[in-house]
Length: 295
Image (cartoon, rainbow, N blue to C red):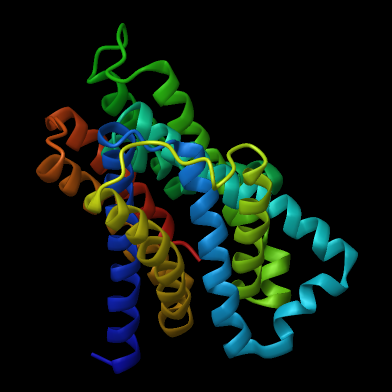
C-alpha cells in the first residue's frame, strides 16, 4: 500500500474514533457527572479554537489573518460559526444528553442524505438512483432506530429526536455553507476562527467561569479528552487525511464514528442497543458508503 494512502487511512480512522469516543465521554459527563451541556460547548469551542489558531500561526504565519481583510468573508465566517460549528456542537451534545451517544451519533449521520436532497432541489433535478436508495435507507433506518418498528411509539423522547434530527440539519449546513471560505482561505483558519467566535458568542449564554457538575479525576480527564483529542487534534488529523487521500475516502472512513460511539456506549455505559437499533444504524451508516461512491 502506498505510504500516503496508508497514512491517510490511519489519520482519518483515528479522527473518527476520537469523535466517536467523545460522544460517549460526553454522555458520561452529562448523565453521571451533571456537567452542563452549554458550559462544555463554550469551553470546548474556546480552547479548541485557540489551539487550532496557535497551530495555524506557526504553520501559516500572517496568512492566518487574511480572512479578516474582506467584509464578505467576515460575514460568512460569523454565519458559519453560529449556524455551523456552534449549532452542530450544541444539537449533537443535547441529543446525547436527552438519549445516548449511540443514538445521537447515528441520527447525525442523516446529514449526508440531507445534503443530497438539498443539492437535488437546488439543481432542479430528480435524485439519482443512488440518492434515492440512500434516502430510502435513511428513512427506514431512522424509523427502526426511533420506533423499533412500531409507529405508535417512540423509543426515545421527542426532545431527543428533535435534537438528533437538528444535529443532522446543522451538520449539512456545516458542510455546505463554508465551501467558498474553505476554497479561498483553507480549512485551518476557517475552523480555528469559527470555533473561537462560537465560543465567545456562547459565553454570553453559558460563561466558562460558571462551572457545574461533580468534578473528579474521571470528569477532568473526560473534558480534557474532548477539548484536546476529540476536537483540536481530531480536526487536524482529518484535515491532513483529506490532503493525503482526498475528501471522498476521508469522509467514508469517518463513518467509523457512529460504530465507535455505539460500541463504547454499550460496553462502557451499559446502553441497551437491540437488534432493531443495530439494523437502523446499519441502514443509516450505509448511506455514507452509497453517497461516497458518487463524484
